[in-house]
Image (cartoon, rainbow over all chains, first blue to last red; front, side, top):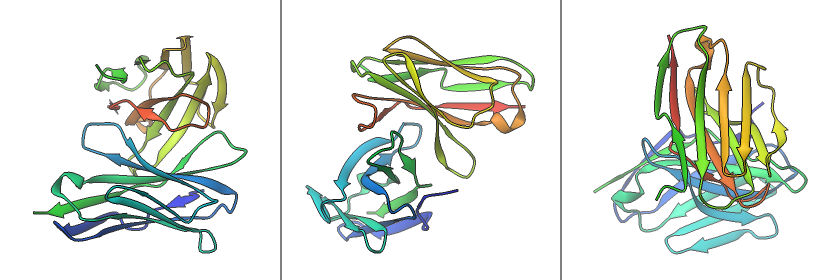
Length: 112
Length: 112
């Protein structure tokens, strides 16, 4: 049972434009969300997080938005750079749980 | 100096063999994990150890046995390998049980 879904396996964006990566979840008890970035032949690296008490968190070019009623979060990258080309995973956990549930990832290609 | 390192990076073996994957972290973290990423790109937790104690043991065949000799190491031993065990296995660690995780580069296991 996949509780975290990333329905777009891939996304291509022109350099300098905005990249929007989406993530949906089914468990209304999830209250903490993370985005990870993964380059080929490397492990995922933490990018940005958001708690359910907020609807937005910003870190430089990266902003995560959380819409709890829609059970949806998104990662915005502005402006997109070729070095952002990677697979992005979202992950979520409940406040009582001790494990993260991951989506299947979205492969972002930023075209120079 | 790699924070979370796992060896080997690639492992090709025959069905029925027994193999081990080693993981070491030099971050001083208390918790370590093993994840499996299958062909559908699901990143699913298998085990987690906190201070050398098994915390999470998802529905994994008992052919898989984790061993944590100390807080900095979590090895994965697999007996009687099957074709379906082919996947990428990631080790990770975190400061606390439900904290942000730092991943190794992965071990690509191919069972022939």
